[in-house]
Length: 357
Image (cartoon, rainbow, N blue to C red; front, side):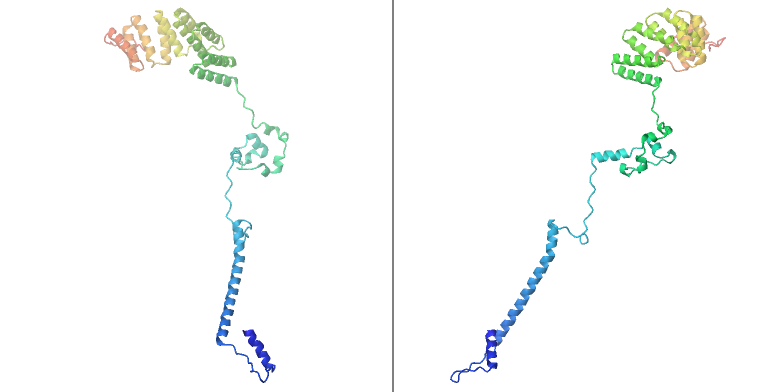
């Protein structure tokens, strides 16, 4: 409508008039309502343009964020700082390597890498690539002989090997494996024939399994060694006593008296065997030797008192019996036996001679 009005106005300005007999056509001035409607339309167009521009601008800003969220475009480091990644779990192989790295170096390696007086502890987790080249590239044969022998090989002595076989024999014997125990004790004696515990254990095991003759040969072989171990003589004599060979047991002990002057057990054992043969005077002498070494032994005091009583030395015997009770080392049965002997001897009288050895 405004375009038509504009054309009419231009024609009027140029002086274009209609014919005289026709009605003069003039430009109709725009009405007030039309102008208002045009302004509203223009305003609406402007608003629409603004809204479109705003939508386009916001879409361009949100598009990088959506793409970053979807993973197609990584965010710029300056704009978004990603949190630090958690440490990777330690795998079994890596854990083992770490534990091994915590172990100290062997002495030979430590001496070869650095002086012993300035040796530094091993750094945990140190890799081979971090070792100084001059140390890793040094050949082993270039090490000085002294450093090579810094960690000598441990040698096992025959005594240690014999001890190990003896302990093995005790273990398998306790488990009831007699053949293995015999083999272990024999191996111990083969390594060290002077191993006293192994020889006694072997003889006892043979005796327990009905091989008394073999047990006696084992002990006799021990007595043939120099210097003589009188423990074997005592074991052999005890075995002979159990086999009711009292005379042989006395002879066995008598043959090694010269090596047992300072052995209280040996002297007391020999005195007890002499006492069983009713050789009380000789028994007193050996009881006295034993009691000089161990005066507070109640069992030996009782044996000494028995020989004194057998020789009619009642006062001395009564005193010896009382001394045996005073030690409080006797079993209830032996204490009752001693008290019975005291009752037989009657009230104690002041002795003319001391019964103490």
